[in-house]
Structure formats: C-alpha cells, structure tokens
Figure (cartoon, rainbow, N blue to C red):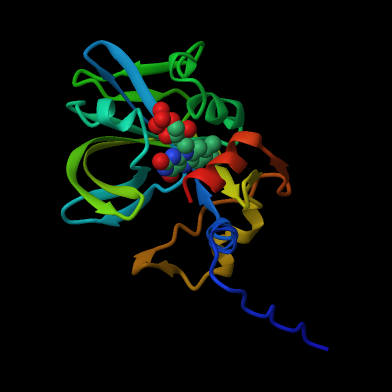
Length: 210
Ligand SMILES: Cc1cc2nc3c(=O)[nH]c(=O)nc-3n(C[C@H](O)[C@H](O)[C@H](O)COP(=O)(O)O)c2cc1C
C-alpha cells in the first residue's frame, strides 16, 4: 500500500520552521576583516543567484548584531564549510568575540576572510540588500572563486548536521546535464554513508532565524 500524504497543518510559526527545515542546504562562513576586526557569521541561507552578472545571496536576520558591522566591509569572504567543520560552524554562530579563535583562515588584500579547507570560496562585495520580512536578502557580486581540495560539504537539515552520500550524486546516474551544463562523468563516488547529529546552535537557528 502506498504511504498516505501527511495532512496539511495550519500555518503557525512552528509548522513553518519545520517546513523550512525540511529543505537541506550547505553552510557557509560569511566573514571579513572590518577596520582590523575579524567579523563573521555562519549562514545556511546561501545560494547561487546569477551567472551574468555573477551573483550569490544569503539572508540575514534583521536582529543580527553582526550584519551592521559586516556590511561595511570592502569585500566579504564566503567559505563553503566542509563536513569536518561542524565545530567551526557552531563557533561561527556563537559568541562574537570567540568566532575566529584558533581558526585557520587567510585575509585577502581587500579584507575578505576565507577559511582553510573550505569546499569552495568566493570573494564578494555587497551588490544590493532587499528587506524581506524579518530578514534581509543580501545579494553579493562575486569577484573571484577558489576551489577546495575535494572536501565534502557540511549539510544542514532539520536543525542537524549531516554528510552527503556521494552515491546519490553518481554522475553516471544523471542524464548528463544539470541546469543546462555538462556533468563531469569522470567524477567518482567516495564518501561514507550519511550520518546526522543534532546541534543545539543549529536548532536554535532553525527557531530564531527560519
Ligand atoms: C547552521 C547554522 C546556520 C545559520 N544560518 C543563518 C542564516 O542563514 N542567516 C542568519 O541570519 N543567521 C544564521 N545563523 C545564525 C548566525 O550564525 C549567528 O548566530 C546569528 O547571526 C547571531 O549572531 P549575530 O547577532 O552576531 O548576528 C545560522 C546558525 C547556524 C548554526
């Protein structure tokens, strides 16, 4: 017998947060050195937006105490967190003065902060800010990108961290194209089976920032 669809529930905040949390995402560090001060947050709302011009976005809560500082940066660094960065992610979402303690990173000439061992990095500047309810959608112009060393991404899903099961991305099982671009059929599947672990801060974000 096929499974019955879950009946729809009224749209209260809890229901909405649960629905938002059902959508898996990666996590990035958004960071810069602003007037000599290391400034940054963890964000799961990062997404690609446009190829021409090159734009990406993330959304930040209007209550953020960091964004008013970070938005003053000449350039912002985006680092896609790797699956061993779960502790780093918690740190970047924790007390402001401790966010970069012990973290290996580099600062570019224009102040973007890029984490070591990231899956990918983007050197960006703020293109536009769009107020959207209790968040601001920040559109970033991408100036440079950096590729990692084949690290696998950290996945955020239902307020927990998880790892990708690479078999799911086996290019030989795709039709050869994603978003109109050729898929590299030479890639191999390497990573272990997915595993997830609950994280207090992640759960808090799902509640506070979803
Ligand atoms: C996994 C994870 C994802 C997060 N994603 C976002 C996000 O997309 N937008 C956001 O405003 N805050 C997000 N946060 C919370 C921020 O990292 C940070 O804790 C928050 O901005 C509060 O700090 P602030 O007042 O210094 O800005 C996330 C936290 C975690 C743990």
